[in-house]
Image (cartoon, rainbow, N blue to C red; front, side, top):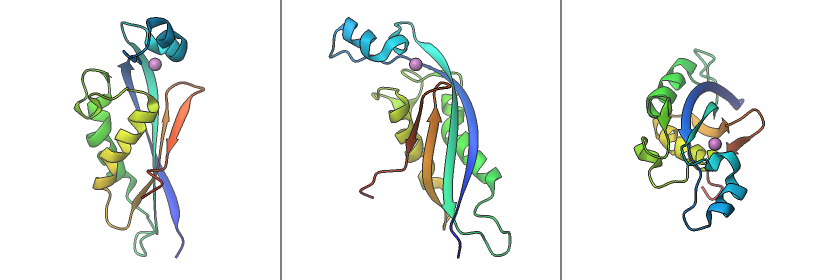
Length: 141
Ligand code: NI
């Protein structure tokens, strides 16, 4: 049976600040650049959720992408869109809201809700036109 990968794209706007209190102000600005600005700033994030599975013999589908859309919106987008990720999102609390950490948190939000026979393959999160992260889950799993 063929194994296929299908992807749903979603979008959200959110604010954050990257700041490590253990290092100096100067080191923070050198490391994080504009993302260290003290009064927060926004990005337009593009999120790609890729799942894998075998097509159902009756429907020809790995998964109904409308259902994947609903999972992503309920578990992720509704919490993040137009929010401050340093303050407003309980499941990002006490995490540096880098796209690395956000991607891992998004994986953990979505994976438990997928139907039987469908597995999460990759989370891709674009922060700017030039910068994005890909997460394939913990390799030890
Ligand atoms: Ni930023």
